[in-house]
Length: 441
Image (cartoon, rainbow, N blue to C red):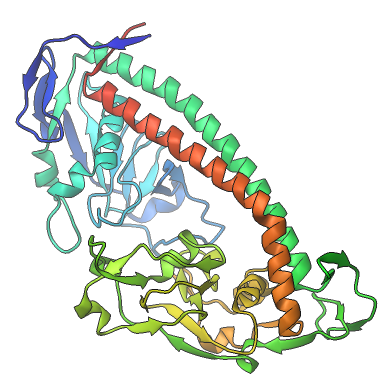
């Protein structure tokens, strides 16, 4: 049960945390936590390897080959349950800076691990630091090119200290509420995944020639031929199998790093390789990222209708994702963006085609790297797919857009519902850890 707090308050002189309940204290991290860096040594093979993710501290699946890891882990630190793990470097680009450890394991020593002292509820402070992650107040205190807080600097950060019993009550309340919210989000994400599978099935069917569009209607191809490709099988007789190298040319983007992005809506638009697989689907029209004129002078311009492939990624699923730029702004491409120029075919059809399971399979076979996975134009040029005449490509694109419009709308609605519940969760945590509500029971 909760009620709006009617406590008397005291001023903190901290801009983002201006006041706290009068019966709370304001102290420093180092007074309530100890810093831990227990190096595992040569016996690391007996431990679970942990990772800090947007979903908290998780046990890594080392067999999957996904993500970054060192060949040797003898310098990793041992972390115990109830420890709080923080990423206090590269805070401007890190998707989540805090997690709570629930399993004994090891994690890279680049992370900061703090252990609660006596009568300190670790889950209350997990939520408090999560609130700081949301409002970027820790990031604002970081220094240097990599936006870092040293242990000494972080130890001096001021934190609220409610009575221990109140810490427990607030943590229990947030645990219960968060569990319900997370369940809601998980269900919505499952729904979105099913919709995306349905959408991808439509695309795969249409760009592989399994069905044809004639006067807006679907028909099975009457005359077919062997594509010469085992995994593709038959294709319509009038379609042709082509390598990307036969229909266009490749080039590379310039050296734009995420650190060079600026928060200025009047800056010059830019696309980085990570944007291709995180922000866009098939077509990119409105570009969010901005760079300075100086940075743009060392980069490469993307023209309307050109296709962009990811050259790098943390997983093989990120590699070779393809979008077509269809906007009217002058846009610049960052490093590891592979640009494909062509005039023979419908660019949107190619984008659909290059994101099918057929094309992705070919890209994965040639991708290289264990920590960061790479592909190159020399590999992408050999990706083969079937292509109908250009006029038919345009009909297929229009059909896919029509057929997937309802699916896209449902996906967008579900994603918006997730965003709204996340905003509610952030506000709920902020109110609780700042003493704005009274938690009882």
